[in-house]
Image (cartoon, rainbow, N blue to C red; front, side, top):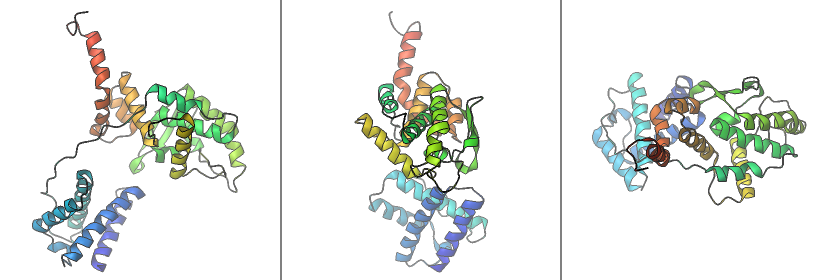
Length: 303
């Protein structure tokens, strides 16, 4: 087991330093490796170079017997394929037994999004005379205005926001940076919060911080804090739909496409490396496309 542990640690170090992988990504890889190592121990396989295609097929069967989803199985196999690629590169093994393993592609779930009527309710429930209410309004407006991930919103610093041209610097996955514009509603809520509510929250803290979003004690708001904030807003708005921070990102992308934004622009704004990641949002705009087609094409209808 020590042999496996050493290689696992070397691999996760490689992910952190060379691939700039996030802590969440590193954790998923480590969990996938642990699952594989437990399997190898049960099969009395003490060296990774002994793993061949037959053992890989047996591992795959074991995963399916655990009733894991196709998506979970695919992720684990992908993690191990990357792990063995690393072992090949460092001379620990001569081949990659996962390289020829093909998996059925899992159907991509259609992202859920909010309609404007539901969004309006979220924007109307915060007490704008209260520092926490101002902060919550700024969070909702920022998430919807920019489509940023929660981790990106959480990492936002005061100096990242340029009110003179209405853009903010976002640090995304793999330390990649991008600039995103924001509109008047987000600007108004951010200005109100930063110049009033944030100052009052900061006064409660023991140390100074440049983080934009603070908790009630004046410290930077955590990812868990963002989820709690959103849950409270949804509760106040009496919405019956489940709303998580990522749903506002889905909503941003869907509304942009529905209003005519091109896919490449939305890809750039979302910080997607591949266009295929953005294309999933086109599924939820088909009604809109049909409506535009029926109203625009000369021979689409008998109007």
